[in-house]
Amino acid sequence: MSSIYFVALPLLFGFAVPLLTKLGKNGVAYTSTLMQAGLFILASTLLISTSWHVEIIAINPPLGISFVLNEASLFFVTLFTLLMMSFSFYYMGLRKTDPYENENKFFILINMLLASSIGLVLSSDIFNIYVFFEIAGISAYILSAYKKTPKALEAGIKYLLTGMIASVFLVFAIALIYIHLGSLNLAVLSEHFVTLPHDTKFLIGLLLFLGFGFKVEIFPLNFWVTDVYEGSSAPVDALFSAIVVKAYLFVFFHILYLFLPNSEYAAFLIYLGAISMLVAEIIALKQSDLKRVFAYSSLGQIGFIFSVMAAGSSEAVTAAFYIVLAHSLAKMMIFLSIASIEREHKSSQISTLTTLNSPFLKVIMVIAMLSLLGIPPPLGFTGKFLALKSFTVSGEFIVLAMIIVASLIESIYYFKITGALFAKGERREKLSLTFSQKGVFGILALALVVIGIAPWLISGFVHDASQVMLDSAAYLQTILGASK
Amino acid sequence: MMSSLLDWFIQPDVITAIVAFGSMGLFFVGLFGLLTQRHLIKIFISISLMEAAVFLYFLGTIFHRELTAPILGDGHTAFTGMNDPIPHAMILTAIVIGMALFALGVSFAIEYYKLTGRTDINKMKEMGE
Image (cartoon, rainbow over all chains, first blue to last red; front, side, top):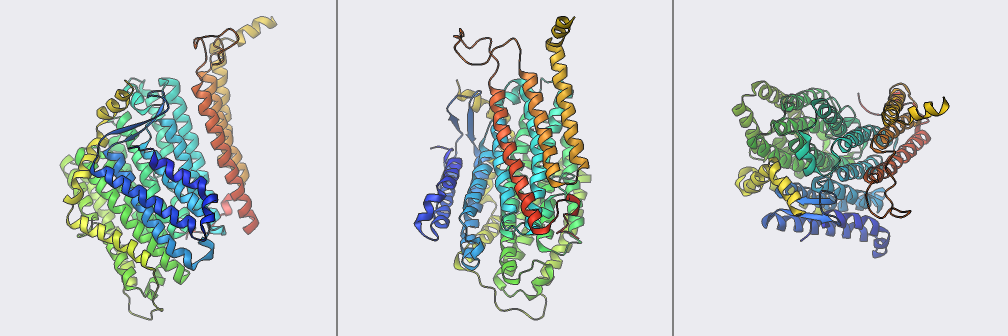
């Protein structure tokens, strides 16, 4: 069994697209969906028979590149393949109504995005992480500007500019790491990073923070995010919010836990996350465009995840994994609903919701918003509850207060949206969804509610994943032990 | 006189200092351009300058004059006394990626100009309040 399939198959698919067009009009779309479904099944079978697996490419570590498939990375791989599969099923329905979406290069881009997001999570080599960072970046920039309208191009240019600046800082950090430590392997670096002089550590840490900070959308490096979300089409936003950011978040904290365990910067990062959440939720109040509102809501939730992850205790990281799962599923549902609404109404203003005629989509959006708010029964409650509990236990009462205030503000605009959804008045004719689209929404919503009511269904996986993510000694042992 | 100046010049410390200050100078030229220029393509060029500065700094710092190229042949039969080839491989990759990003950026800027006639980043206000 090999973890390299998760990266190689989507990439290979991208190269094979010119051949697959011979299969007929929908050949590429069907094969892409089929492949993603296959990867999801592979990931979930691995999840059940879970064990550490190090895939060595050509040369043994520390010199060669290796992929590490452990509980933590497998959790993210399963999540990404599930979300990408649901996205493809949804998108097949979308293609029928819009000839512009009927292009095969879209499937090259989303599969590159999938391959690089999984690569980011699996890779144990910092330069390899940089390469996947750029592949994910390039496919995301093109997806962002995909429609080639002035708005989309502006979003693409802004995304690209920030991405280029981030990559300069990241290369600088990697160069300094190599100059001082002479290795690129995360395990080797983790062993020797603490021996560096304090100033060097600080400089490398700062450069890594700047490099990844733009991508993990943390305050104050997130000024570009909402413009990008507004300019891109709604399905693409679903990918950004549910998959790409999560991959970068995983890498950021993976590197943080390995390089600076129990660091003195943890308090700073916790507050940064909380401030990020508070600021985003306050600005979200004033927005009138749905995509913009949920972009700010994404920023808020990511600030929350950032803050909880930075706390670094085992309870906090478990909570963070629950929030990641809940947020990814909910944001996928929300942005795909917005995509359907935007297709039908040609607008994504909140006011268009008052004329929406689709009881199904309304229920879906309400479930997703309840989950984002942390109101039971959906899964969001479990994550938020555990996170607040862990902050209470560690005595971080200021952060606790900030998160609660931010959640209250969040509830105001969610109620505004819910109010618009159920407002009395003229309705348009019924919004049509294909069977596969309804299926995707139904399964995502069901997952949110069922796991929310019965979190013990996945608590074993989540617990193992979070413990493994924190256990850097085992990580070192697996990678360096594999070469002996 | 001339030869002693050259000897002074090729001392490892002096070369390291020149590389460090030169590349950091280039980095700040790029940063200055990034912060002051408003034309999209000039901004992309500025970022490329910053990138080039990082590449130069890395290669200049990691390269040792007394060591040879990591190639067997010409009397070299063992991998000793050779420069580390990994930084060169890394920087080659990074240059290719940087070039791809630059090309993508310029093509976006051209498309945007064709649609709106604007090249000024301050006037890119299709969105927001």
